[in-house]
Length: 257
Length: 251
Image (cartoon, rainbow over all chains, first blue to last red; front, side):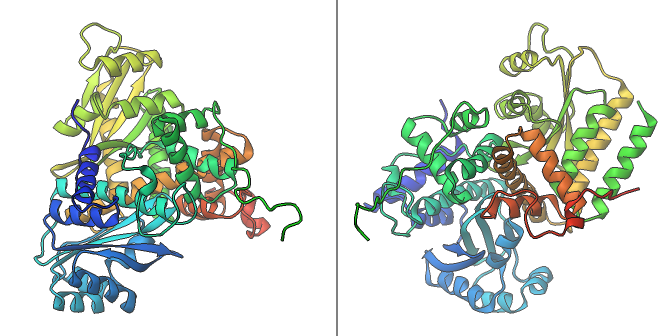
């Protein structure tokens, strides 16, 4: 059976991690993104309170400067993506559209050698994990298949960020976009189905947790049960399956503080 | 074809486009009205995602079997062919012999459908999706209805893109992803509300949509605020009594 496109992209990300003797992280996603779409550099920043916060990983110094620029200037493609919840594809920083939208950023970005900047929100509906930014020295749009690959890579980066932030899984939270709790297994990337989103919403009530945690818990359950995410979600929506909150993970001993 | 229904639909669609526009609300209205206007039993608006998937942007009803029929078409079916060729694709008897897409036909007939149509959503030389229609009766369609169906598919395309300058193909991609993500937000809200109030997804959607209209907010904004709120109270606390109570938006 031919591997799906998502499986192929995950394979490249995992292979990159293995070649460096490390667990899969957003660093590998960035590297594969640059190679796959023939770009110059990429970075991922985690979102806090709706704004891109610190850069978690960049592939080169110019990329680091571009992300810092947007934080300092408070404008730029990465800034806009979380507000619009859609990619911002600035294929030519030299055109009037870019100068109009980001007057300060466009000028400085071009001085730093960027001809095109592409920003992808790392989101699942109302769940906001961060932003992935990419740039190319030369101007020009992304090809259709390059865009598709980058969207899939953005999905992978989103899952890695969500799984690593906060105390959510068996692995300790170290916040470096490290999907260590997956034990190197491919995540279920068939994400885009209504019942998965509906089940995620339902779990906020069943588990009493915010939406991002509900999504991580749903995926963790499917993974531990060895079932497809869509099938577990279907059972939850059809009310054949309910998840329950964890018992208190840190029970206070009697008489203790 | 009901002339009053047609003109009412036209007015409603135009009204939705000029007010605080929400693309998913718009596409849902279009899918819903397509059913009555085109003598169909069910309708869906499918959008082509560059990841290589056809995704449901709106559906006339939430029955799990119907959603599955849309989703099967990622592998085989009229929408896939319609998307690839840019031409309308019709099957006038899904229960007959020699089906081109056996798995799809079996699932469709199991849900009671005998006829299917996929009408392309086109923008110049690009096909961005399809309007998918199902009927329970076999047989060919009224050509006038087919023409109206294509017009509705074209209106769906216009609605999807109308907020932005669409000369650049990048803008189309951005708009599509924005619409698809809005759909996800709304699905998450439906789930949270359905769980909270013990209702099904159709009811939850209606509640969200009616509240958005009565309080003059965009459906996606209502959905996002509800999903990210620390509580599951609905209507959300903090609105005035006048905003929370149903008030007609149009005479």
